[in-house]
Image (tube, rainbow, N blue to C red; front, side, top):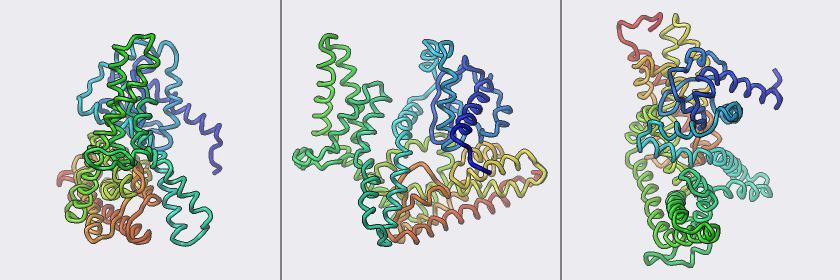
Length: 464
């Protein structure tokens, strides 16, 4: 079958958006629209208006999640294309205005959930660039090791490293935007951190180094810039605002960044890297077991977003994050558990149909359809999926303790989609073998644990 043309793909995304809108209560029921890597996130005035069964029946919908926002799982790539089409349907005057803003402020969010959502809003838009540059870095490493195309290697190195060398600027820009400031001022203050000239500045008795503090320093600097800017907007006369406010924002925030935040954030970043290395070098299988076993509950609660700055910091420092391949084992346990459910419930057409449609996405690391469509509703299979993830994480963690580090050069993908992003300290072949072995352990243990312990004795093999 020939692939869709751009026109056909656009029509398909428009049709998906148009099909979703009436099933979530129409434009008048929408207060906010956003998306992450896999989910269309909607703020709803009245969630009871959602027609869930009809939503689930749409071919493009992989699952539904109800949290602080109503989340429709569409999968990577698809969600980024459907969201603009969905927003276009809301761009009429009737679908905008003060009512939407008021409803947005009235959303029921705890401070911690608001914090995590803001962290996600800052870092998630950067993930496509991290993935693209990470894959180019991996390709560059292969060419370098094989001695192929030596004239192309420097060009690939520049492509792979350019974004990472300036990631602090992008973090600063997104942070200021998220906290209600002028984005370019946040980027300007964060740019100080990566400016080579900071090497001639001394703070706390030490010379600063370009990039010191990394994304954590950029985030803190941009937040400070927002508060300075807002103070200036309140007190600076309007006639002078265009000159004084940006100047004071960059000056005050820049001085605090140079003579305080860069040092503090640098120490914190170093501590994070040292702790991660110590944990994997000394905790080994035990640390991997705990991390792999707990990640599915973190995803279910949305708490995994708190790990994004940690992954990014490790990638900045070491070139890869050794935590992500361990956490990715949770998805392997989920796949194994779903396969066991499929085998154990031959008469449950609904569950088996859900598994058949969601399993390919699960192999590629998109776990939400299996979590919310299969294991979590059944109860015990969710726990046994966590057991599979724990054993897979323990396998990868053991090799980390033995000195065979397995890491990812970018965040976002997992499952089979993580293979192109793998990096380590023992060569690509060993790195791929360890990660693949971990996936296999997760699949097998998740399957066996679910098959034997995922159902009560009273459970009927024909359904639940």
